[in-house]
Image (cartoon, rainbow, N blue to C red; front, side):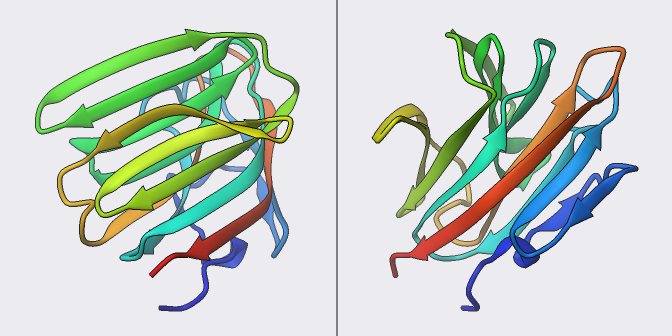
Length: 172
């Protein structure tokens, strides 16, 4: 499989205003894009067990910037960060769960993603310590899956977000 880089990430729900190069993606997150169907997402496809990480903007209250694992519109996991903490959105086979983990966050964080034998884990770096936010299994993730980053905004005004230093380590 080809090496996954920032250029490997393709838009799913492309924003109106964005810039992307091999190191960074910057975008304006438009208002009223707070649902899965309307959020801007950058995704890559993989079949491998991997470790991935990227530095990402922490969204203002009412917005989310985070990691997305996607199988179908009915089967996905989203973990977003905002000034108020983390939001976890899980949907699989008709089951939906939305959870918030309240905590103060700095203006940007490094988010991590791990996939092992169909199980996914999403976390963040608190200084030099990695802290898991959630772990889940999604139908179909044991074979091919899409993963990447999403940017959502439930506010009335846009905000600027960016994604930097995306890296992937294949494990198989």
